[in-house]
Image (cartoon, rainbow, N blue to C red; front, side, top):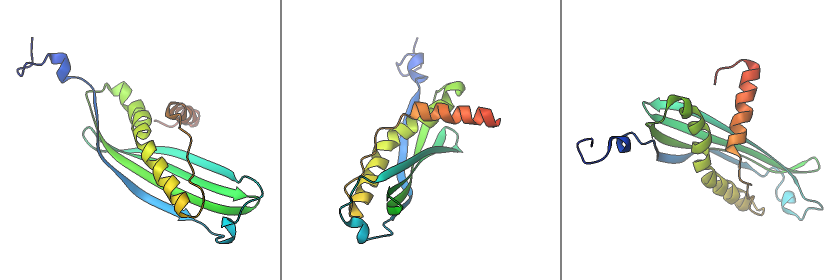
Amino acid sequence: MTNGNGAPPEAVAAPQLNVLAQYTKDLSFENPNAPASLAQQQQQPAINIQINVGANNLAENEYEVTLSVEGKAESGSTVLFSFELAYAGVFRIVNVPQENLHPLIMIECPRLLFPFAREIIASAVRDGGFPPLMLDPVDFVGLYRQNMERQAQQGQPS
């Protein structure tokens, strides 16, 4: 049996995830103590990174997913640099069961965006006069589970 164009029916219903667009929504880099902060440091700076994922339904089967990354490097009480990046993508998702849609949006979509966000941050830090900051890979499954547990404890819907 075919669907009229020679393809079996199951081929028509195959899940699809398409990236329609990717873009920087917001980027901020601060080097508040330059040029003093550019001098050789006595010790490795403490670097703190926060990562969050948000999503909005734009249209039927289309979602905007935003990967937010904030970071700060400090040496003692001195801020060497800080940054904020909101990097987003628009994704078309079709033929995915409803129970799998939320995890797909919150895990796989940011996983596709992350390498681009990582490069933007590395370049911004380098352009600020520091060695490029190469973010470690992110466990988006673990991040998703943490967020779901936190929401369950707070009694919030996902």
